Figure 1 (cartoon, rainbow, N blue to C red):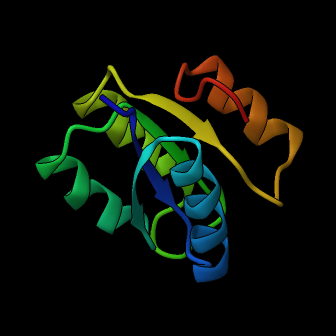
Figure 2 (cartoon, rainbow, N blue to C red):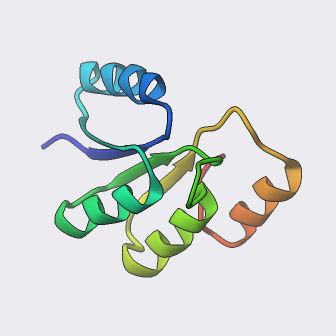
Length: 101
């Protein structure tokens, strides 16, 4: 059975590109364009891996991953972002919210 991946990004082109690559390598991919949408998807799907953007409107990647850790602690979380500051990276890693940034 293929690993179920949830991609979360507010940029449609990024979602489309990442999904294409992951599907070709055998993953089952679900996409969300916001943190709120991602939480709704998690309620009704069994997801093993979350790859999220850090900077998004309404709910950033850190806020999303805090809720994921509380409600779905077995998910592996990765942050993939063009924006990052050292403080944010250290904070997420130290809190155990993300496996890789």
